[in-house]
Length: 115
Picture 1 (cartoon, rainbow, N blue to C red):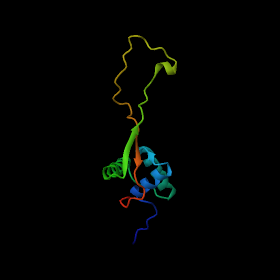
Picture 2: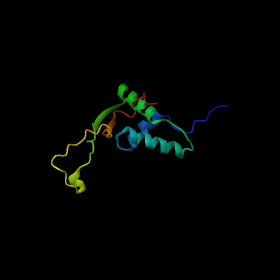
Picture 3: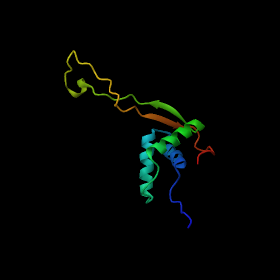
Picture 4: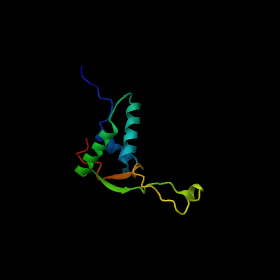
């Protein structure tokens, strides 16, 4: 029985998404948008976060997108929260803190290598 394709493949979706949001976005946002798109198409499962990262990596290696910038990481700031920090307080290194978002910019949406 033939399979009827109802949704765009991840590569084509990444291109269309980047064009629609102004040419620049970060991988997690692209993945969330793809999941929402698949759900709107009536599909339950799609591409995992790791798989989407692999598509981003490939597009970057092929020169379809380039790294633009990373957000500054946000950490707890006692002054902002209204708490006075003791003078002898030493902030932990927080190895579990989330990494900053890395934004990628599309180079040429008309490139034939976008699939």
